[in-house]
Length: 393
Image (cartoon, rainbow, N blue to C red; front, side, top):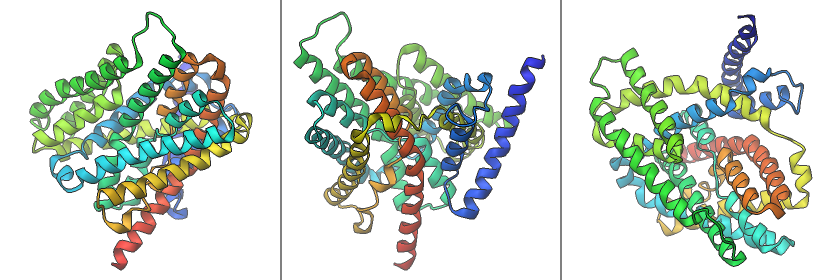
């Protein structure tokens, strides 16, 4: 039993670290996400190496649970009422951000001297975002207006477009390389993952919408929320589907088919944060600050091109969608955080392109570390600036 003492003590301390990060973040106007990631970086293997192995081993499970809860909450922003007000902006801006980011990064890195195949893959990695960090910064800011509603919708579907772009890119590269094998084509895999994930989300969300809130508030409702999150994540993994897309679908189905959704999502939010505390600390502990140096000048070019692509995509998308003019310049800057989806894409690309495996992995880990640390700060600054402009108007 003594073997369990250290992990339990560390988990208890991490929850208090989360409380401290919340308090310090409010005082210094810094995102608590960045503080938790920085703490993880300091206490992880790249720093003081204080976290026991038993805690580090929890990272995969905590990641899935935390991000599944975030996905359900993000899906709740896709209500028909919200989409009627913001749907055109969300779809057009998200598509423009993904397409222009990929184009700017791919062309820029090709011009920088990288091979076409490597530049195309890195361009798709640049499209990925971090819904968990973005959502938490919005929640911490206390800003609740049209811009944050549209931003939630953007990050809710942005990674879906990015995953599709990645699958199509890998298909094109495979066709040009004229490779053959028993593996299914990337396009078929993408269709199965996207379609299957949405179908699973509907299959869980529909009965969930009927049952949720039928019991009294409090503990029974919280158990319903936990059951939905864990069931969605587990079935997605078992079927080889995306628990992010499935979770978003569950949230979207529930918010559009039940009158009691506000209480249900409030309960999900209540148990989400403890998981996110551990998730962000362990995410920071897994970051390698030396990876960006290994990527060399290409890593710096990637980071600058990604920032340019997202800002340009957000501005052009807002212009095409006829979004409020004051918001055009803020969409891309608010979507800079990047996390697990980019790493997952990088690992899959490294497996299919072994000649570039080291470069892809090093650059993805290094730049993700940077964007995960500075991205939430940029999002917080955007929300603060946008809130000030709204107040002045």
